[in-house]
Image (cartoon, protein in one colour):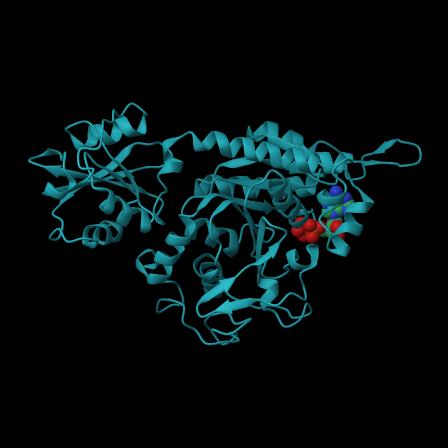
Length: 425
Ligand code: ADP
C-alpha cells in the first residue's frame, strides 16, 4: 500500500481492493477475518472509545470533537482522533494538517501527531483535494472504517474519539459494529427545535445499538454581546438541555456562539489551546472533564478490564480438570468457555471443550481463536501468562473455586477470591 491509498471495492474505488468483502459487497464473516483480528488486536490497546454524533451538519460536531480531544490531552491522556466524516472531513482543516504527508509502512498507516498526545487519522488525508466529492456506497465506507481501525498504528490510547458524519447512516453504524465496545456517545446539537428533533434519532440509534449516551452538548447556545454584555438567544435556548432532561442523560455543557471559534477553526488552531479562559473555553474544558470522569467511573466495572470480542460478547475461559477449576494450568483437561453479556453481566452461554495438546504458545493461540478475552486460572506459569498477554488476553491467576460458572459470577460481582499463584515457576 502506498501513501494515500485506501483499499476498497466497486467502480468508484481509486485503488486496489484487498479488503474482505462478501459476494454482495458486505464483509463476510467479518468477525473471523484476519482484518477483524487486526481490529481486535489494535482496539485492545485502546482503553475507551467515544463516538461524537449529531443529527444535522453544521452544528459544531467536529469543533466539539477536536476540542474534546484537546481537552483530554490537556488532562495528560493519550488521545486518538478518527475522522470518518467521509463526505466532509473537517478535522485536517480544524487542526491545520492539510499539508501533512501520511507515512505508510507496508500495511500500516502512521497517524499524524499533534503535540505529544494526539494522533489523528482522517479520510481527508487520502483525498487529492478538498473539492473532491466522495461517492461511496455502504460497503465501501465500512471497508474504510475497518481499515482505519485495523491498519492505523494507534498504539496505546486512553481514549479514541471518533468524529462521525451527521445523521445515523453507514459510518456510525459501521464503527459501532466494528469497534467492539463503544464506551459512549456524545451528541452535539444546537438549541433550536429543528436540530433537536434530529437529535432524537441519534438517541434512538444509540439505544438500538446499545451504545450508552455520555451526554448532550448544546452548542451555539446564546451569544453574549462583547460591547453591552447582553445575551441574545439567536437559536433559541435550552433545546439540548430540555432534551437531555427528557431522555434522562447528562447535559455535558452549553457552548455560546463565539466569533473567535470561527476564527480558530478557519486558522486550524484548536480553540481550547488559546482560549481556555473564556466562557466557551471553560465549557469545552468542562465537557472533557465530565467525560473523563464518566470514563474513569466505568473503569471500575469488570467489563472494561475484560474487553468484549468484536461480536460484543465477553467470552471468559476457565481451565478445568476433573470437572473443577484446575489448580495447575498445565494439567487442565478441558476449558469451560463462558459467554457474558457485557451490559447486564449475565451469563448467556457455556460450552466445555478439549484443548489441543499442551505445547508452549499453542494454547494461547487456540484460546484467542475461540474469541476469549479473559482467562480465570488457578495457577499458571509466568511464561504462559506472557504468551496470553502478548495476544491481548487478560489472565487472572490464583482464582479459588470449583464450578466454572460460579467462578465467573464471582469475578463479575467482584467477590472472586484469589490466592498465591500455585504454578509460579
Ligand atoms: P459540523 O461538524 O457539525 O458540521 P463544524 O464543527 O464543522 O460543524 O462547525 C461548523 C461551523 O460552525 C464552523 O465554521 C465552526 O467554526 C462554527 N462553530 C462551531 N461552533 C461554534 C460556536 N460555538 N460559535 C461560533 N461558531 C461555531
